[in-house]
Length: 412
Image (cartoon, rainbow, N blue to C red; front, side, top):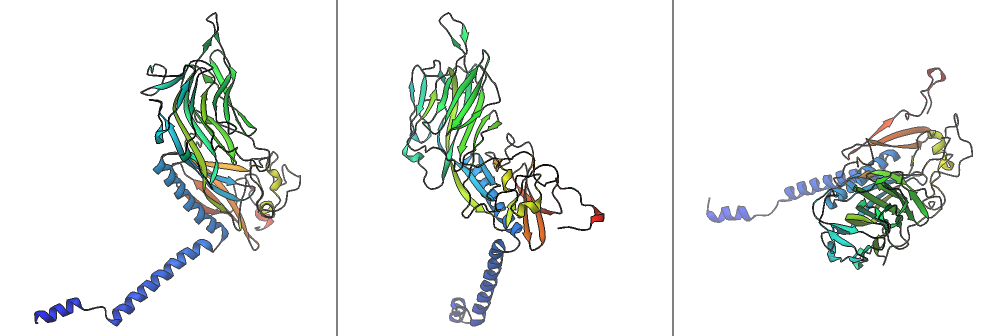
């Protein structure tokens, strides 16, 4: 074959048949893609919720592992809403010098000093020593801290070693006072002090949390607090003390322009981290409802379980609660409602590796949902496993429901 002919065959375009084949393949691919997308927005309500929740978990885990921050999912039982609450790191002070991340400069005063004597510490390097009640370290607000639109609150973590104080005779005396504060946003104070231990109190917008844990002097402890409209929490060495929000429309006072001040009691502080809490994704359940333990599923779907909650941290959804009007004031054995009020907000925490946080969850976490399709009552259990994955399955009944009597016939 002549070279010119071979060259012509190499340069030739697509034939009409080949173009038709390509168009057919693309059409089939688009139809398959549309089917997958459509399945996420249609079908049984519980399966739609399972698809969305699985995606939210994947996003939360990725944010936690990539940014090396804690993240959480917030389940609002009263309004049937799921919120992905992420942490955005604003600044970190390792206390090796007065400079933190982002070129933020801290200000020492009142005899505050950076010390390298680590005889009382758990890590290498320096730490901040505040030897007197008048000693302080201030982290000024920086313009890049501002978060607009999705701001929900603030979180702070630091290592804390209580020190004792001496009076004029050289005798050791307990000292109470402020430990950390951010204007009107929050304050953490030593409110009870003994000769060998102290206890802390967190105050945010009038919500007060008293620590149940005593902190030994001359020992390092990790303090962490989170303040958002979904809850006010204080952790000491991983042990949680939650605050009770009893007012409607609770919000954290704005942090814009507020400095973080450390000091007020003799202590040592290290590894300070400041975060803003942002709602990265919110999902309003459609056709499905979150159900709390000890609640009869039928009473839940009929909107008769709203009065069991003692937490009013979130405003009601437009038009009233999603799950219906207030429940009758009838609770107790045989009514299908718990005797004692229960929190309306539940948190599922993930650590910096994207796994279920072992300091907050001793094992797997189960979230239950229910839906009514015609006369068919459907139940689903979501399980958050320790490694961070989530699975779901339909169940015939929840573990708190009584076993049906075969002689009574089948029910919904």
